[in-house]
Length: 258
Image 1 (spheres, rainbow, N blue to C red):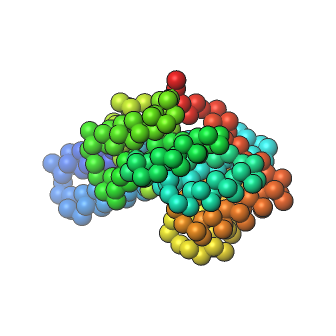
Image 2 (image 1 turned 45 degrees about the horizontal axis):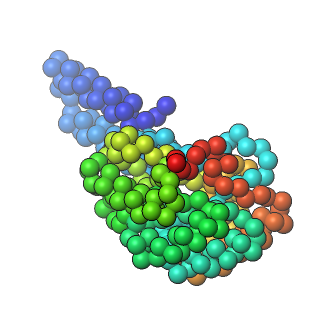
Image 3 (image 1 turned 90 degrees about the vertical axis):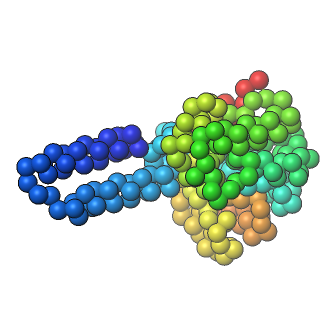
């Protein structure tokens, strides 16, 4: 398995081998630079792809699911558009998982309560969703996760088990933090990109081309274009006999502990 530990050990071995050879024959400096560069690329790609399991085990789909069943997830809320998302989910009788940001929970606790009351699941998506989250040390990450957990647990009365790292990026510090907090990382295999573009046609086509049994869809409840795409997508699922189930059922993982 390609993991951060295995890759690091492999490249350290290569560097030590070059150093040893350098005792007997001159090794051009560029060989060292090339090896370090390749090592850096491996780390960059592995850290950026949540499905790679490079630093932590992430549950991104159920590959064993053969029936037309998928799960819907929403990131970065709650916010004013979450209410429209909830209305659509109720209209189509669909349950989803919302990965909430702590500072938004403080602003809209009543919306989080509505999410829970309507039978949807809640997960932790850090407190601040900082663009520098990937550079935090383990202590800071633990503080972010625990602060958000505390806010959610006031509303759920249960311990939160699901965590989704901001931007889907993982690091050694996140791995060390999760070893302490005990959260399960929930990823995705169908990324809508609705957080980066407002082109509804592009978003919709991207999703439907990637839909397959056992998949987990990533959307956001933070903008009007996501609401419009969601309704199109729910209609598509109905027409193609897909059933939306919870991440709990799809992955057979407990979202909470009493």
